[in-house]
Image (tube, rainbow, N blue to C red; front, side):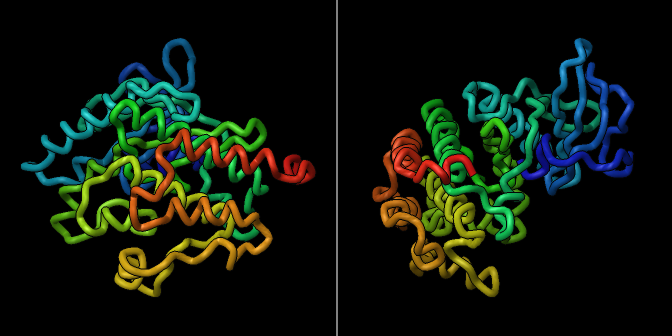
Length: 301
């Protein structure tokens, strides 16, 4: 999640969210604010057994009017139940969810590390084999979710956590982008994160496993280049480029990378879902083949 549980802790300040550090909430002791985002605030907390968790307090009441709020809360409950079914090493666990004191919340696995936003910057790019490992791990997590009928719909760096020392990767926030669909549609805004949206989604088609893989292709491109495959001076220009233009070629920005890797990224970004890898498992296998062929010195940078 963009405002996820493992970002650098923010100073404790009760004005930063609905829960006060040091207070109790639904059987949990709130320790400190971890981050804020458009959808709410995330706190480090612990239960009666002192097990650390992350609590995400969503601001649904502030985003929906009285008539629409019940439906939004029902969608939230549905997505939370779907996410809680997912049990995979590359997916952050959702333990429970609920609504109390006017706050809609998720209780999730507390994670070390930081989001991939940190590693999408030119001066902080990951070693290439580690970037491929991250993408393969996300692909495996998506394959598990897709096999259980769950789509992510908002794969992007902010929704992936990496603990670099252990190389542990966790995908976060399954389905939460759907919560604000109605509110955004009423204002004419594009759903999801536009730069990571597959062309067919912009054309009005429903989300599907291939659109999650397209977003993963954009994420991998960014991890390797600190750029996006489509760029524009305005939102309109960006959307037109995604809908009808070719993406930047990986080889143009990184001629040092193997041609086969560039071809794989191009398949992920193909406008036809049928050309993309069959599923996240197949993609992960291809990425791990590239890692196995990488010069050994680069594997330990």
